[in-house]
Image 1 (cartoon, rainbow, N blue to C red):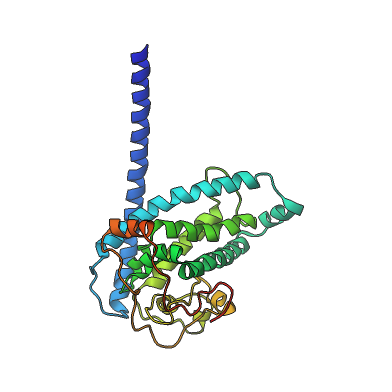
Image 2 (cartoon, rainbow, N blue to C red; image 1 turned 135 degrees about the horizontal axis):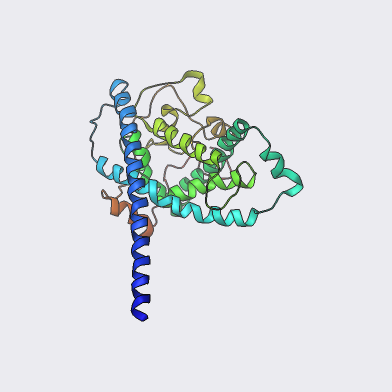
Amino acid sequence: MVRVTDRSSKIIMLEYVFKSLSVLAFDVMRLTIWLVLLVAIFVPLERLFTLHPARIWRPQTGVDLAWYFLNSLLPAAFIAMPLALLARVLHGADPGGFYTAMALLPFWIKLLLMLVVNDLGAYWYHRAAHAYPVLWGFHAIHHSAEHVDWLVNTRAHPVDIVFTRLAGLIPVYLLGLAQVTDGRLDPGVVLLMIIGTIWTFFIHANIRWRLGFAEWLVSSPAFHHWHHTNDEHRDHNFAFFFPLIDRIFGTAWLPHYWPPVYGIDGKVPSTLSGQLIEPLTSIRPANPRQTSTSLTGHP
């Protein structure tokens, strides 16, 4: 009887492992297809409209590709847990019929509001990540790139990604713009994440496009490249979608010229494991060139 039980446990465990590996293999295949599409879009654009001349395969390209796969798989698991907890807390809640009214809004209006609310929440976390050494240690991994292109978008510590996404998504759910359910994301949130992913690849791209007046309505490569500069203007342009947020809170900077230099003061490890571990073992001093990271004042 014991042998049968042991054998059954082993079979169940093997089935679980096989299922997990199958899911992982499917996710890796899906991400590989996405990567091929991104390469097909952005590599030609960066060849035709190059801002700063660079080779396609540059130093750290391999590390950034590793970040692409890791950050497409790992943060989602940690984001799911607090969102599931939020689902339980808000289950059945409808204060004054507010959530019912929000649910009746046309989908395109909810999606637009999601974009604004998500960007506003992410803005304040992004700004905090420049102000506090504990958070800056994680965020500095993303800013460490001395050459900015579409693939640099993937270079980010998972902890930084988790906090950024939660800062944007939790207000979206709290305001009833997305339906709270167990086990699946709201369709609007899925579309929000797809749009956000594509757009953040675009604003990191090494292309010299300027969008004219539209640059004050939606973020552009010029707008976000200034956020990556390694001079006194680094602590500007925290919004991912809407530059108006930075204008309202006094952190916008968008001249007619491009930043002369990128990166951070000091260095981060050159390996994936080093970049992953360093922020967990030491606190990196906050940006010594802070001009606008105060959370209570303006520059």
